Amino acid sequence: MAAQLGERFWISSCFSDLARMLEDTSPDVVHITTPPQGHYSLAKACLETGAHVYLEKPFTVTADEAESLIKLADSRGLKITAGHNYQFTLEMLEMRRLVKEGYLGGKPVHLESHYAYDLDDLSYVRPILGNRQHWVRQLPGRLLHNVISHGIARLAEFLDDDLSDIVARAHQSVKLQTLHGGEVFDELRVLIRDGSGTTAFFCFSTQIKPGLSQFRICGPRNSIVVDQTSGSVIQNKKRNNKSYLTYFVPPLLNAREHLRNAGRNIVDFAGRKLYQDSGMTELIRQFYQSISLTTAPPIPYREILLTARIMDEIFAQIYPTRMVLQPPRTELAAT
Image (cartoon, rainbow, N blue to C red; front, top):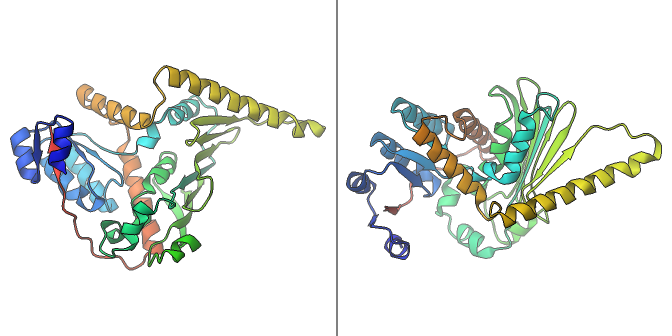
């Protein structure tokens, strides 16, 4: 498969051995997009030979592995980042700008992250459910482990490192039960509170329709809702509407917000700024820029580690008995 892909995209060399690839090509940057069980060992080998690393989500299987890689990168003067590309979509960049300019009126008070996954495509879920040795089912968090880091990363950006509470509850949907889902959970709810009192809620669902991909950040004065499905940023300002105006003014203001987003998206689409995976383009651009200019990587290491820590705790609560991980076979391509 690697050889076929190389021929299709005019890639000069293909390898099935990482050590040989690193020795023959001496890459400046390596993108690791294998199943998560191989992330730590592959990234460690790349860093040890002097290559910067772009590591797909989830960054590593455990927080200890994440910390080890970050320390290794720092010790060698190299950069490493996580493939949290949804953090760099146009709407997330706009939300971040508003927060930086003080729109919330202070430190966030409450955060909500909704992330959905559609199990209607049985071509993805059937191979997982039909094989207990499938690499997804060998992860500590099974199906959840492979997908929720996108939603957790939104929260980690605005939470303190000191977390006082994490309460996780998971279950299997009726639909997955009919597919004989075994031990695989596909519904997850998490409550979090950090040391400074900021609270957070995370919801992962395969059954909510239409699927939600939203982030809400609430401040002491105003709040922002980011809808990544429609590429919208809704600004909610505190207003004291008297009498019956409260039934008319807020809906009109919300309608104006949606019209503003539609207009902005049309302009961005016409200007070729809005397209599928534009967030990945921006993340990679910023990562390469941090390498060439010797600046901080686009995702602070603190956020990568906190995301990993939260995921560790979630999976410890919902899957108390962890399975032994077997690294999958990997194939690599280099230019």
